[in-house]
Image (tube, rainbow over all chains, first blue to last red):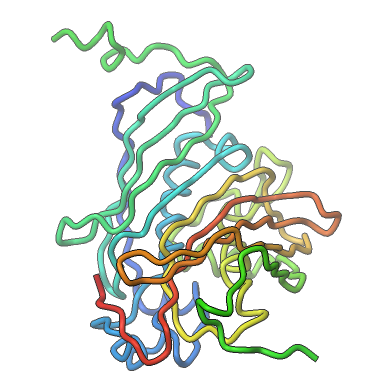
Length: 152
Length: 147
C-alpha cells in the first residue's frame, strides 16, 4: 500500500461513510445496563433521545482515513486529537472528512497534518480535530494544488 | 480487596493515578474491533510492514478511557476530547496495560470535567500509545441536555 508521492496543502482526502448501528456500538462498548451507549432507557434518563456511539468510534474512523493516506507512517508515528462536539446516535450516518492543512519535513520524511471532522446525516459536525502522520519520503509538489499550480 | 466509592467532582483529586489490569490482545479482539468500526484493513489479519498483523491503532483506547472504572463507581459521563500519539503498533499476542494520572479538573458552563493523561504499554513496559482525554462527569440525579 504505497504512500502517494504527491500530497498537497488543501488536498481533500477521500471521505468515508460510516453507520454506527446499535450492534456495532454493542461490540465496541460492551453491552451493560446503565450505559448511555447500550441501554436505551438509561440514555433517555440521562437526557438523550436514544443510545449514543462512543466518541472514540469517530477517532477510529479518522484513524482509518489516515492509515489509508499514510500507511505505516500513521500506525507508528501518527497523532490524533479530536473534540466531540455533538452526540452520535445509534443509526446515524456519518461522513468522515479530511483536508491536508500542512506538510513539513521531519527527518528523512514529511509530516502531513490533516484537519479532520465527522458530519452526520443532517450536515452537523459531530467531531472535529487534527491528525498527522509521516510520509516516508520528501513529498513532490502536487501538480494542481501546489502554490505554483493555483493560478488558474 | 478494592473498594469502589462513587466518583464525584469533589472527591476526584488532581494527581491521582489509575492502572488497568493487563490484557492479552487476541486476534478475536482485533476482528471484533474491525467489525465495530467497519474497517477490515488487511494488516489486521495478515502481513504488514511491521512483520505480521497489527491492531487498529485505536484498539486499546477503551482500556485507557475506562481506567477510572477500576477505582470508582462512575454514574455517567461523556467523552469530550481525545488525543493519541501512536508510538508502536499493538500486535496480537501482546499483553498490554494502561496507566493514567488525573492532570486537571475544571467546571465550565455548569459542567464538570476531568483530564487524564495516559500511556498504554506492552509487557516490558515499552510505551505503545500516549495521550490524554477529557471526560465530562454527569452527576447522579442530573440529566445531560443532549447537545
